[in-house]
Image (cartoon, rainbow, N blue to C red):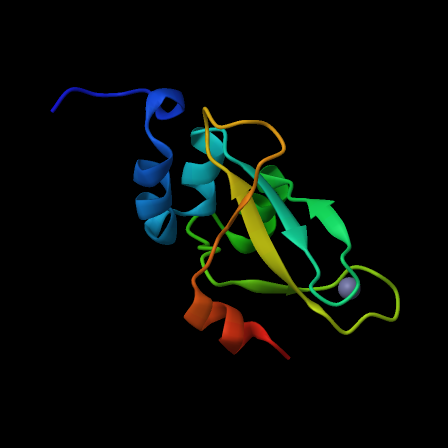
Length: 105
Ligand SMILES: [Zn+2]
């Protein structure tokens, strides 16, 4: 099979690969990540350089949750992604329904 650049691969290919990818692979392939709080709707960009440095390059974000950054909010933020080659501003969840239910505090 011939090599295809990440930006010309299909959305289906990216979303099938996403559960197995590490943060260093997201950074290498230029994925755009953000978090959204389901309680207060705060959106934040994810700095993949910082995640790699602080949590390690092998960290996986599929079904992961993070404490909300808004003062006084107890929400658990979910991760959203824009795979390489997809429209800017369009985000897909980095998780499945089972994980979403598990992530509700
Ligand atoms: Zn919040």
